[in-house]
Length: 219
Image (cartoon, rainbow, N blue to C red; front, side):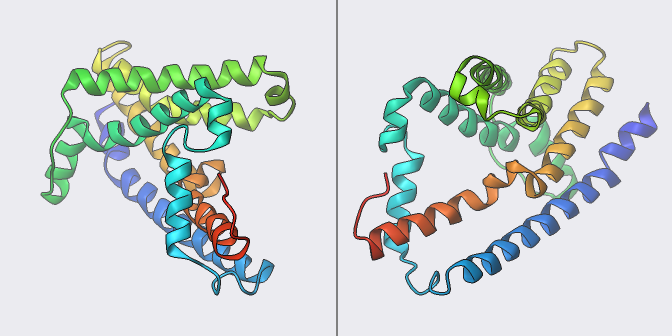
């Protein structure tokens, strides 16, 4: 078990980050080429003010008409994405590993806060699954891969909770936590999780087109 822990927390971490960084770079390059191919003037009418204005209206809850029509989904999705980013970055165990490996560190969350955020992320994933099962128009466009993506996002938090509360064997859960985190990291550029990378660019494109070309709002 110790050898497995050393492997997943050592070499496999570097492999995961290499695939994430390389895959993300490839994804961004592919999108840039495709955007030019689809619209030869895409970069000419790019407008930073209109791009930032559009991003603001789609990031802040209830600043666009779509989010106003689905208040429950808006709140859950906002909190889910916020905690999905904050908890891994500021949990004390992750910062301690970075400090040990690279000598860099920053402020951390209290254990209780990180634990609560993890529970909320898992609860949000349950909400997304139930919504896909029970809302007819959502269920109609749902495939098995949608559930797999939700499971992939939830796995690091479920295993993190189990490891923190020492349920199922602390070392086993820690290994599963690291493995599921690495799986999610690798999947980001190669699955629909890639919206974490290109969603700001897509929003910038739409915001520029609507603001600088059509002189209209896109929210």
